[in-house]
Length: 307
Image (cartoon, rainbow, N blue to C red):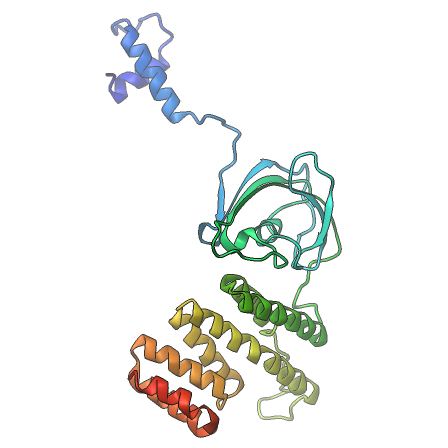
């Protein structure tokens, strides 16, 4: 077997043995061929596979667009195909008809790109599809984005009314996914909806302590009111996934930034604290929730017996 140094000399040699080394044997040549095969990719032009969503979505570039295009984002209308040679279909990115994996992939592509996409679980489904918990959901596509129309939604350019409208639509879709038990997709909708609310307007009209801008104050209040149910439902979906730390943080966002006396946030944070072993904090939240809303006294008691 050739050593590294011998292999390097043999690769660099012109084969005439002029450097005084022994002539290469058949075994040596076979060793070189084997070594070359190990370091040479089968297809030098093959693109690296991109892994997204904790491995639930994978795609590999088959053909790159000849030139760069405008960013593809939610709100854009795309013409696409999911198999070579099939007729084009149309969909609005972020709508309910496109499989989640294709939606995630499309946001990373240019018009004219062709990729092989593989997805599992919820990512293999569109919102319009039904999750069969007894079946293994796995799908493959050869995905091509042929054209794109419109401009991607940009929360910094949308008006307050437009952001609230889109966020409410995402909350309704998240609620539908939650009812179906599609918890990952529900969290995705709640997260995107909540993200539209984190751009607020400056309320101070000058020096700190000066008169507030009444319009900015009113707009920010509306944004917070819209964000509250998104965070609460997001927390609920996370709790069903037993992601207690993340759910506790969403409840705390509500209590710290929006409404310190929100009963649902207190009760759900108390439930999270029980699971996390923070028993004193759990008791404090649960009792405060009961004091604010006596109708949940029985549910609070069920949690308190776990302490």
